[in-house]
Image (cartoon, rainbow, N blue to C red; front, side):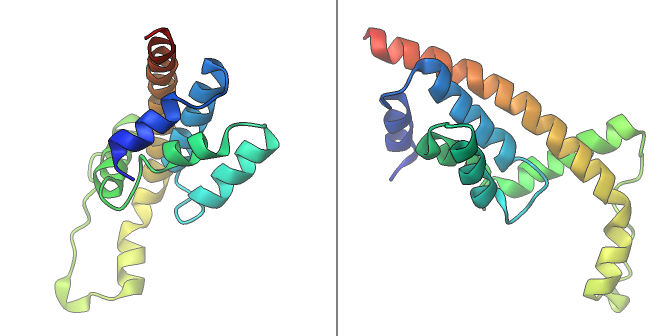
Length: 143
């Protein structure tokens, strides 16, 4: 299903515009959260608990996908580092000593900027997504 088809399906969902927009924005927030690998499970669970539209929530989740994850999380980590006052965020790697444990140790200072930045960016993107989808649903229903 192409992006355009998914957007049409979201806009034509038979729920209130507020519920559709809220479902989508919750999906965006969870999709941009730092809980990597758990997005779909958390999104479906939250949609079920709060009686949101599961389909629309999952579409919102997949704003962050394998193609968009690296730029989104890189930007979010950079934002988090700037706000937390961390100037040096790119570690100096010793390529001859490269191992998984070495990478974890060297990137440890990025954990809080990543968590803070992705959460903050998720909130902002969710708010913007809510407004856009709400207006789009209203426009779609008036046509």
